[in-house]
Each structure stands twice: as C-alpha cells, then as structure tokens.
Image (cartoon, rainbow, N blue to C red):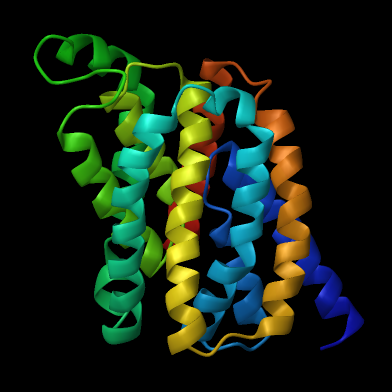
Length: 248
C-alpha cells in the first residue's frame, strides 16, 4: 500500500466518521474508495464495516449528554440492533448481493420521505398508534430489520433508524440521533465480529479507516449537536438523495 493510498483511506474514514454521526451513509464514501484500490466487493464491505466501528464509538461518546436518560430504551433497541446485525452479516456471507442491493435505493427513498414528513405524521398518529418515550411495540421489530440491512451492507442505515425512531419515539431529533449512533455502532460491531472469524479482512486498510473515523466521529458529534432539527432534516435529505444517486 502506497503512502497516497494510506492517506486517502484515512481521509475517507474521517469523512465517513463525520457524516455517519450526523446522519449516516458514510459507507458510500469509504466503500467506493476501497473498490477503487482493487479490493473485491465483499472484502471491501467487511473491511469497511470493521474500520468504521471505532467512529461509531467516538460519535456516541460525543453525544453522551443527549444519551442521558435513554438507558432502558437503548438496551431494548440495542438488543434488536445486535440480533439484526448478526443476521445481516451471516446473510452477506451466505447470499448473493445482487438481489438485496437492487432494492437499497427504495429503502433509502422511503426513509427520506419518513424523515421529512415525520413531525406531521407523528402528530397524526398520536392516539392512533403506540408512540411513547420507550417506543411502540413495532419499533424494536423495525430496528431489527434495519439491523439486518446494516449488517448486510450498511449504507444509510442511520437514515432508516432516524426515520423509524422519529415516528416511534416521543423525543427530540438530537436525542434520537444520539441513540441512532449507538444502535448503528452495535450493528457494525456485531457484523465485524462475524467477519473477523468468517471473512477476509484487509487489516491495514481497516486500521487506517478506523484512525480517520475516530477523529471524524468527534467532529460529527460537535457539528451535529449544533444543528437545529430543521437543518438536520435538510442534511439528511441531501445525503440521502446523494446516496440514492450513487447506488443507482
């Protein structure tokens, strides 16, 4: 690996760590870079997953103030995310990627719609669905499904989590974003554990991505915590549209 490639991987990890903490979709930065350096798609995917785990931890630490008081629901939804990540990682190793990746743009587009109309829809469903501080009964199931997606590919799972929890949790967007970082980190961590024992990982590349993502996670937390809910939703839409364009 040349010095230029190493620098590019650190920079990609930094950018991905930043955007992951603010909204998600950092994989759409790092995954193409790994492909450009000649790594096979599955190898690039598993290496990327491992490399971005430290960035999720860094972002969660940066959002620790917004995580206060969320312990019970973090445990409840964290279990769902962890199990989903396990299933998704196993699916990546056992199934062809073509079918699932074909519907990824649809998932992202749906998530963007839910994020945009979330406040209005939440008011409408108030009293019609089980929406509470701890989340309705459907929320863990939806988080589990998002974990499967995240363990399989991971791009834009943060957007999906924000959409789901924005509808199901009675809380402000910044606190939901903090919880999103924990759940996405658990998915990546579980998938990474599976990949360490069952897949080929380029450890040098993963380490360089990790270095960048740790710093990026702190920057993302500092930036994200200063954004108003409206601005944060606008960032989510911009990143999501970009994600769809890249995947198509």
